[in-house]
Image (cartoon, rainbow, N blue to C red):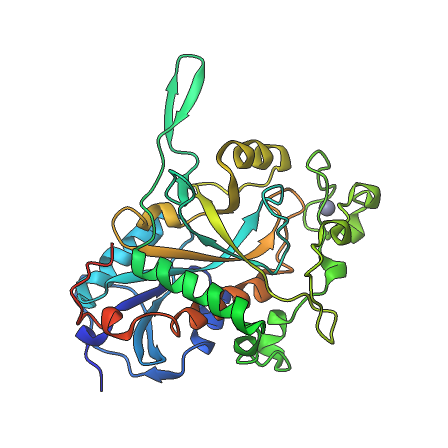
Length: 328
Ligand SMILES: [Zn+2]
């Protein structure tokens, strides 16, 4: 029976839909353990490939909530050395192409750390200077990301797809994790705004002529399985974390082009500077006004599947806290 000191990896799944997918990825679940009196988090404990993992959700989304949960977690699980931030995100495709249902992982690019706090900075005379570059993910996790990618390239199979089968989408309560289908991938030009909040694009009259042709963007290696499901693609690069949801295509494009951003999310800025952490984001929307929750289940599932696969590429001694590496 593991004690709290045997857990060395924290897995943060901010939303309930992300938490459920994450729990399904555990090989085995463990019993709850006593917590520090200053720790008010609720945990799900378990293991994947002999790595003991503590999973926590967030009371609310956002950077400050993520920072608070990690701080409290470390009061109880003092040997936790790495974190995985596993959930959904909005994507910018001009640095892609990236589609709904793909995975984005933060990784340093050139001189940049791989994560930017996009609404953090100072107003200087005539312009806004962003000061929000955050720490890089720890080397151990970046090495695991590369090892996973290498194995994927060598074996040619999709390593993530089998993990998705751990979520029984035939069950009514898990049906929303099903692959929605390419025909539900509504991606519009950035100057085309959604017409009626609360209604999907095909019901509210968003101009289909403004839809971006996905097939024209697909690369030649796009592989569809028997269900016409594209294989899950993984993109590595800069993730932008901010305090507000991006729901405007033009604002998204401006930020993304300036900083070569692949994906927008709302929690990494709260943890990256104080805690060695890797952000794994399943793409659920295009960070514009057409954003809805149709892809949230599947996007949560692919992010959780990627996180699970990563545990097969991490050095076991290191994550168990027995190695000498600081992980940074
Ligand atoms: Zn729309």
